[in-house]
Structures are given as C-alpha cells and as structure tokens.
Image (cartoon, rainbow, N blue to C red; front, side, top):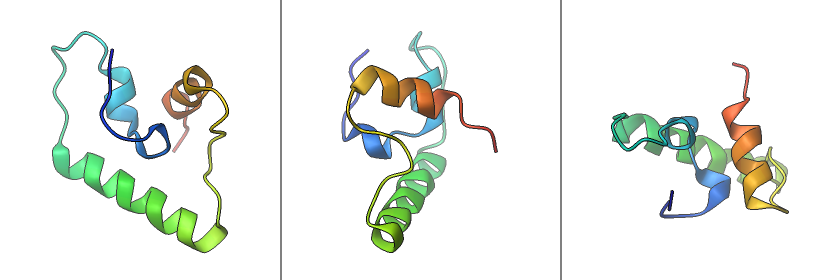
Length: 65
C-alpha cells in the first residue's frame, strides 16, 4: 500500500488501514503529524527509527498509548 508523505509522520490510522475500506479522520492524522513535528523540534529526533520503512510501520502500529 502506497502512502503519501514521510514515514516519520505517518499516523497509526494510516498504517492499520491496509484494505482501503477503513476510513480515518484527516484531522486526527494532522494532529499526529503536528505532534511528530513538535517532538522533532524539541528533541531533534523522531520517536521511531527511520532506518527501514517496514520497521517504522511496525513500530507505529504497535504504539501503546
């Protein structure tokens, strides 16, 4: 499944929606991306490793809130 944008900012809703039939809130996805941006600005890093795209998707998909 192709995703637009950078994997670092990819919201969990986008990762879990693999069938194309699941819908998610654009507002929630934007808030996730804003949070990732603020995290990056404060810590100068991302909370997920960016070495391999598949690993990033697994890490995002397994986030415990």
